[in-house]
Amino acid sequence: MKVLVDNGIVSASSILVPAEHHQMLRWGTGVTTSTIVGFKRAELAKDPDQQTEKDALFTIGRLARAGSITLFTYSELRAEDWRRSHGAERTLNALSGCKLQQCPSAVERSKFQSTINMQEWFAKGGEKDRDNGSTLSEFNQIPYFEWLKFLTQADVTALVNYADKLRLDDFELDSLQDLSWFQSLSRALITSEDLPDCFHIWTARRNKLDVFLTMEKKLPRVIKQLNERKVKVVDLSVAVLRPTHLLRLLGVTEFDEVPVAPDRFYSVMEVLNINQRLLES
Image (cartoon, rainbow, N blue to C red):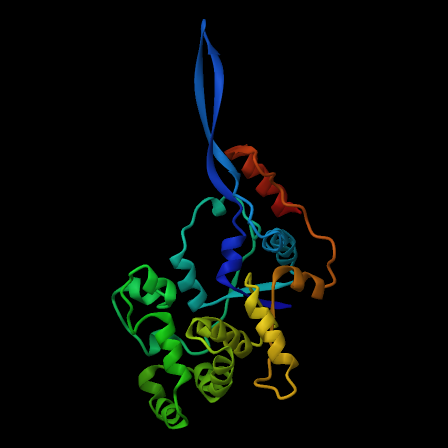
């Protein structure tokens, strides 16, 4: 099974945060305090359902390492990954040892937008950016997806005619012929905040992937409702699933235990040993 992995999945796979342990040691006739640097498990989610989804990623990681499923990413998801902070996840996370395969974007944004300001290139350009006072730009993610959403057939024909100058490959030309699918889905999901997910699902469709894996609650529910309509909005060949739903689809009913406990300090060596056992499982 081929699975496109949302950035929220990659973020949720990280379970450690840096921590210190203070230990009293006898030194000669006195006592001294030694500080040991290590890790502890990140605070559990307030929503138990969300925590269950996070914990299920360890089972997904094992299946991916075993080759039962293949995980994919692409340029727009890598752009989203740039926006988040990276910490202890490189030492141990649910997807340790899982190599995410690269697939092409349905239509590569860099073919149509160019800027030397990488901040605006990686920015989403949505409500959160506005609330944070970030400078919005036509080079953000959402404006590009909005541009695609409102292209007419005449616009598409013009782009195809300029394919050589735009350096569009055959895959992208085929995507432009399939653009109405993306436009139909984006209209069904209504808000501009949904456009990145629409594009991710479209990219999964164009690459003939089976699943778009997400931590979100709302998106799979909305997609399910679209599938259940008597009059289909779009032919949704890509399943949009949360981790536990993917595992149940695969026939997995018992999930792996999380290898670290809450409220416990782990030294660097302990974490490395846990990670090694995880890779060998």
